[in-house]
Length: 482
Ligand code: AMP
Ligand code: ZN
Image 1 (cartoon, rainbow, N blue to C red):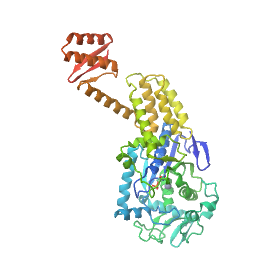
Image 2: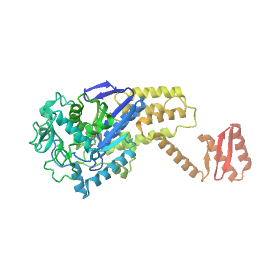
Image 3: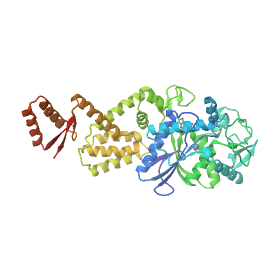
Image 4: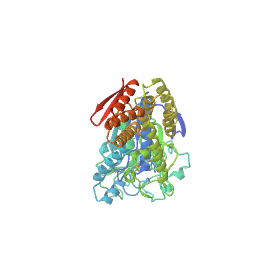
């Protein structure tokens, strides 16, 4: 597959440290509130990437953290811990809200057909590992203690700001955010590895450490969790584009300084879901859009997934209700077209299916072109082959797209059957999905009901001549080709 790598700023052939195997890491949610649908855009696109790699034959180990400590309201190590803020807002303990919003996050993922990663690790469960890392960075001279906190010393690095080609001054956190600077820092780009003495005195969760009772910084958790579960050679790191700097930049600084060799090969960043008025969707401004809100308004969560798939992950996506309505209408039409395919019209032509799958692999494998993957669904519906083959192709594509296409189409067919049965006065016909035969079976039933037995027999003979055998059942009939 060709994949854009934010670390090199170009599209590259995707390669892995161990052939055929991908070590993949994803920055998980900060569980102080519900995920908004912007956050979920990132997780949907990362899910498609993981599934595409599996489809392409890789075996994948995907690891995700849950941020339940240390993520301050400003990336410049100032402000309050987001978890503590959430707990105060809801008059609950930090661990209570962590559990509640972690469950809510995975509920949303389930509704959006996002697979749970192979390893999910809350930060609070791995504090010893982070302490080991901070000790290692101090030993190697990459960190210093000041004012009670431990800081990463960015001046010790040969390269920093890997994702940005801009002037360092523009990107210095303190300057960029216009926030109060931490005077303990030797350089404004240094960042906290471990907090002890700080102005966050009311921090709820604290642990013993060689530097006193305190808690880890946000960046160290992702380095620690990935090094533990992915090992020292990470193939693919994912996250939203806002995490590229400073979070991912700092992860690289920590991990590479600790292990002493290059760490992650490829960086995959999903661009933002935006609104027309407020720009980047966030929890603090504009309408707080969640999966539950979409459901309350009557949208199937998979319509939102379909909406995301129609655009490329490296472009901002503008959310509006009108755009979502357009996606809902297109999705409904697509499902209706799939429902019109006859599963009994077989057998599956494996050669045709293989040709379509091969094309799909090439199209989607070009920097995860999900918009083309959606187009491929319509192409499959037009394939010059039988219904069973078309359905087999769609089912295969859906291993990557996860839109529950065949299940939804089967539900539509079932519903159509029920409606038909109701319009047939409760007479249920089960056959091989041929409307012309169904109509004859129904005519025979109506003739019998009207005591027109000659006509009923004539229809039975007509069906027999076509090789169709009808069996009367309580409340209906079944037919098959013999
Ligand atoms: P958080 O819960 O704030 O740690 O963020 C979870 C994930 O959502 C991270 O990968 C962020 O980069 C990503 N993210 C945040 N806002 C947006 C947005 N508006 N669009 C897409 N992804 C986002
Ligand atoms: Zn992270």
